[in-house]
Length: 193
Image (cartoon, rainbow, N blue to C red):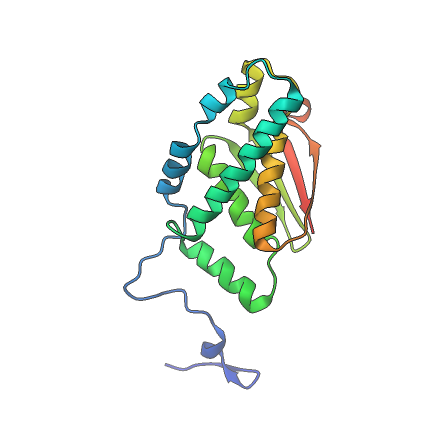
């Protein structure tokens, strides 16, 4: 087998191995992660307990919930349910010194999947300066609306989760929300470093 040369070193020496013989590592989130998170946090019950609360009080409760859910998500994602994607994201960050957006994005995606697996969302921009997340169907916002809570106190849940993840990934972020589901048909989060 011939090995190419580049910059004085064999190319083979510059490449990262994506296989570890005898150690199966999936690239996708393990369904057990969703099961563990939803077993600990019953979103339906949490929202029902907010009935009769005003937007400000609901925001505070959901903000604390967002912090706790993200902490559990990161603990599970980096431990019991560590997958190949997680290993590679961490490895690339160590080798390149570039953390944003990949480390934060991984936690944010698992945070959404973990507690709200039926929500519809999409990452529309992912650069070393900005991450844009659009949520077009949010079970939390819908549940709050159904019990008569006005506004978007659920943004406290999302913002808190993002900032907890940023603390772990070492990213100093600023988050804006220029669009919301009620007004624009989607919540859009711009997360910048």
